[in-house]
Image 1 (cartoon, helix red, strand yellow):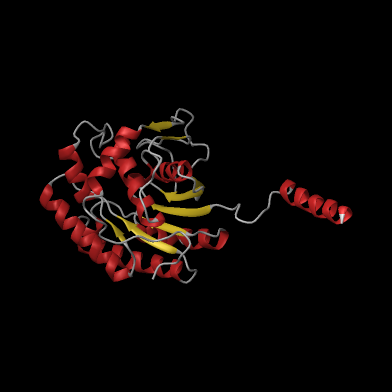
Image 2 (image 1 turned 120 degrees about the horizontal axis):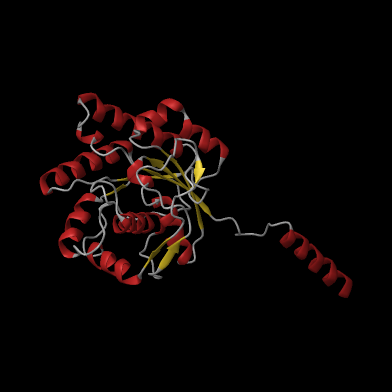
Length: 277
């Protein structure tokens, strides 16, 4: 019996040293988007928030400034990423205004088609897919944007995360928070936090309990140097002067959650372990 115990103990130690044991591997999420996705590094912020709450998540991204989802379909980058890695969820974010036909009548048609194609690619692999909304500063365009984005998500059969209307309420109720980057267009520190909380709620099914956390990853600006090459959210940045960390206090997280939790979820909640329906 003693020899059997020593044999079992040896096997356990060997398995531990080789880096494998049941349940070790964290979930993996792919973010596909543009500068609205990478300014402030939303993928890394989401991973840090999830990890702080006991759910380790590796986040990758395929992003480029001004990029559209149609371009990601055309270059096959998402398909290659799905073949190379086992993702549990994909977060899609379109270029701002495409689904409102802001770049011509073909832009909204092409965008909706790209969302359907990418959703179907992921669905075949049992991967959860969500469409993360963009935002408009004025109330009427904001409502029109949400209608267009939610319609595209319904058409693709995937959940939609409304950002714009929630941002409208938060800007009114918490004007002291940093909603926009210094250029007045891209996400500021607290808009990145709002996105991270909304993605967390959608994929994990509840709001985070731990409210303060630090993002130890590149905090990209609009001049990031990023291309559409697949990269981990915490990979070394192309530019050496990119800031490497961002901390969030519980007061900001509490303010955002207390406001958006009153709205109810437009799209319900999901799980990283289940594919989209």
